[in-house]
Amino acid sequence: MATVPGCDMAIVEPAKVAGYLLSNSHPIGRGKAHFFTQFGFRQNAPVVLARALLDHVRIHNFADVQVSAYGAKYRVDGYLASPDRRNPRVSTVWMIRNGENAPRFITAFPC
Image (tube, rainbow, N blue to C red; front, top):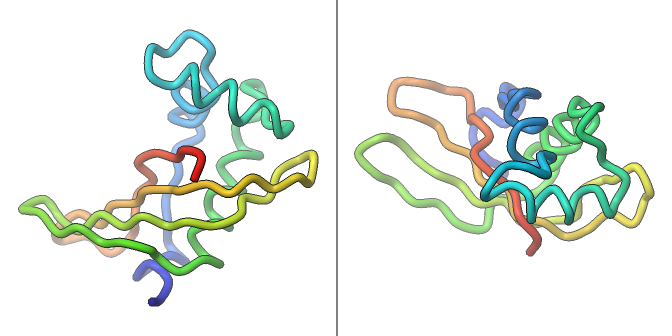
């Protein structure tokens, strides 16, 4: 396998991280927030998780790719550098939309 094409240009929106992955009130994200906060990530510092996600896509190879009418979706599995240094194994999902070169962060979850 290889890294996600264009991973050096990957995009993670800190607002999505704070409002979804680290949100205790998001209907889907609250379970993920519980997971990520166990490793030292905090809602009031979403940029820390955003940077870790960018590092994750840049250093790990993709495990799966699915192509649709909208573009290519890549799943990346590997260890995520965490503030408490326990570095959980997670899957991240990235999409390169048709006509674009930069992968955009979609979601993350425990492996």
